[in-house]
Image (cartoon, rainbow over all chains, first blue to last red):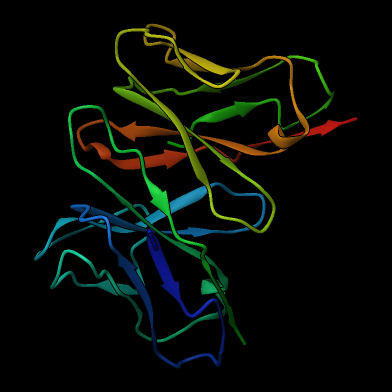
Length: 114
Length: 112
C-alpha cells in the first residue's frame, strides 16, 4: 500500500537547469496537487489537477509546469531553476467527494538551487 | 489571504490541554486541519464544513464558527505523540476546497 510516492527525495541543481519532480499515487484519486513549503511558512499551492487532462494554477505557479496524462501521475517541472525555488516540495492526492478533500501527502522532495 | 493561526508556538506538559485558533478575513466554506512532525509529511486530521459542526479525532476535536470566520482545534489530555506543527487550511472563495490557503502553523511541544 504505497500511497503517494515522490522521487527524488533530495536534489541539488544549478541555476538555470531544468528538472522534473515525480509524483505517483496508487489510490485512484482524482485530485492531485503540488505544494512548496519554506521555513516559517505554511504550505503554498503551486498547481493542482482534478483529473487526467485537467490542471489549474494555484497560489504560486510561476516557474513551474505540470501535466496530468494519467490518473496516477502528476509530475512537476521546473523550467529554469532559480535560487528562490529552493524549498521542500510536497505532492498530495485526494478523493473528490462531498465532504471536502482530505489530502494524502507524499514524503516530500528537498530541492536546493545553487 | 493566508489565515492567521494563534498561538505561534505552545509548550505543554503531558496531560494538559491546548487550543489552537485559525482566523480568516474572508468568508469560508471549509477549514482543514493537518499535523506535521519534524522532517515528515503533513498528516490529515479533519475537515470542518460550513455549519459549525464539531468533529473529533482521538482526543483532538475542532469547531468552525462561520460567522466569526474562525476555527479552533482542541487538544485534550495531550500526549507526547501530539508534538508537531499544526496547520489550518482554508478554501479560497470561488474556488472551493480545490484550492487551500494554509496558515503559517502552530508548533506544539509536549514534554513529560
